[in-house]
Every structure is written in structure tokens, then in C-alpha cells.
Length: 82
Image 1 (tube, rainbow, N blue to C red):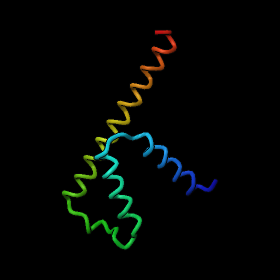
Image 2 (cartoon, helix red, strand yellow; image 1 turned 60 degrees about the vertical axis):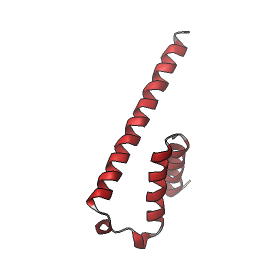
Image 3 (cartoon, helix red, strand yellow; image 1 turned 90 degrees about the horizontal axis):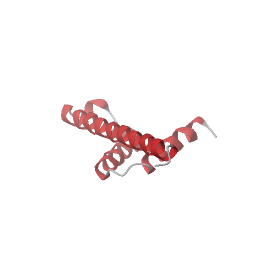
């Protein structure tokens, strides 16, 4: 598997594990922009757009962390037989 294929698989795995529709829509919009390289120029994004992307990424990271903590807690309970 090439490094590009590995990165693609990592992205697919992350996306498949997400349940937040708003976060998925943000990712979709970003991927569409990056799929057309001529449309991706940093200067084209306003400060507000960059702030929105940063806020959405923080929300996504927080949700992923929460989910990881829930999995850890579930595993602890499962191991203890509860």
C-alpha cells in the first residue's frame, strides 16, 4: 500500500466513525475545495471562514476525545465484568 493509500484509509476510517452531521458537512466542503486545487488559495478565505474551520475542527476533536473516553470506560467495565 502506498503512503497516499494509507493516508486515504486513515481519513476514511475517521470519517466512518463520525456521527456528527455538521462536522461531516464541514469536512465535505473542505474536501470539495481541495479537490479543485485552483480554488484553494489561502487568501480566498476570509478570517471568518478560517475561524469557522478552526472552531469546527476543535468541536470535531472534542467529540473524538469524548468518544475515546467512552470506549475506555466501556472497556474498563467490560474487563471488570460489570
